[in-house]
Amino acid sequence: MIEYKNYKISYNPKPIPTSVFDWDWQADGFDGAIDSQDDRAGTGSSVDDCKRQIDELLCTKNDA
Image 1 (cartoon, rainbow, N blue to C red):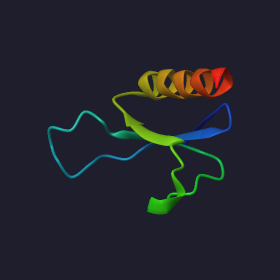
Image 2: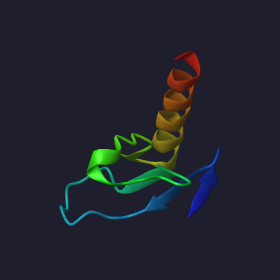
Image 3: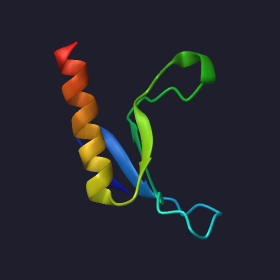
Image 4: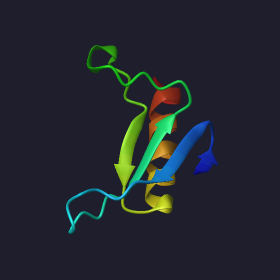
């Protein structure tokens, strides 16, 4: 597991052999309940892709 800006990135190979999104990321304290509307989680094709998505999310939240 990799920590990055209060987010955790982990390798989680999916059951689909052709999946390129084998990396998951989520914020510390992420509420994964469907009704929570917590969008601080996602999947990526690499650690760098996950970091880019986290940076974009943080930038968007700071601009709001």
